[in-house]
Image (tube, rainbow, N blue to C red; front, side):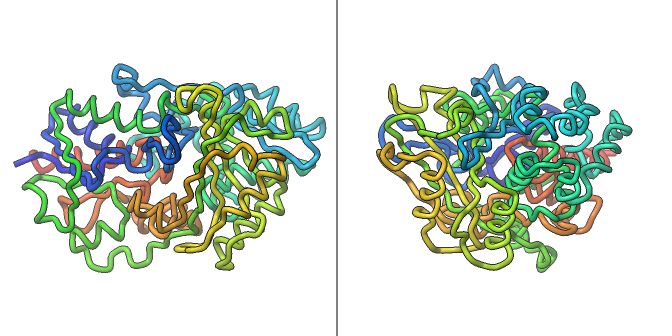
Length: 471
């Protein structure tokens, strides 16, 4: 009998498998697709030589992840590449706010009236990313906080809505940058703990940047898989699990799936019936004949570009997609330019470009024109650079990754108590009603992103359970 079986070879499933294999347990992973990756894949979606990331592309929480930091993934080919600027947020007048690794550069871009307020906001956490990320991303506590005072201060600042955080600033540019950061998790700006989202992304940029892996996001699961195999773990691909009986006998089963899929496969009944999925996204991968012709010079140097621009426009777009059930006419866009830092992603002189806007859950329309109108607004002549495009709405995204239920790339709405308690109201979110069955996907804390911490935390829960059984 195996010690552990993992269902789903996304970053969380693979991280869980690695953590258990490192402790000497026998582990096998079963993945429905023909390749590993989950939300971190790289494929030629448009034209030969253009390597796109169908799902996640830039990883603010990946390079600084406590889970990844403690694994020798660089020995297995993972190399982080940094653009000159982590993020730019352009405006109609041709200027841009920037989120730089430099606090001074970031603060200066916000204007004289808000530069000091920004410095004061981030100052208590500078130089403390390792401890803060370990403590924050291990909630609910899988270990005692290393620095409870810093964590408590972060909680007091971050638990209120991001609109409270914005009150620290006087001008629109700083408030809009925070709003754009919150929108990365498709959260309403006035939602619980959304201040923590904006602050965490900003601190990640100052501590480690917002890089992408050389060659594409696929490098992350590939490195995890190679390390797992060296530890004696086994990975099966092209194996769809429909019920527990499809799997070999094991002491523990860990699911890197949505709660819905877990309940169906493990026959858990309606235990997750109150779990809510959020708005979806409509995504376009572009093959370009040259770089995006942004009007703002800073955007031409940034790996990520937030296209809004104002807090009001961002809030309207989020509300329309999340609460009003209609696609925004002027969507807020998150875009990525990975080939700026990694020319290997496209033929010489060409570029890959990645953009998405928010749409209602399970929406089946086409947002291409609205997205490209927004891009032309800040990068006139953009359409002239397009060689090919690959579009994906909620239906296509689910086909690529079943965890994106209804196109929700966060695997669960980031609203209400579900912000703090995922996938249900419990201090033991990785456990289920069946003692041998666990959940490790981004539906569990700390939530969405390619950082492996949900898998890391779930592996701790499994390890403790098995150890107690042995005792």
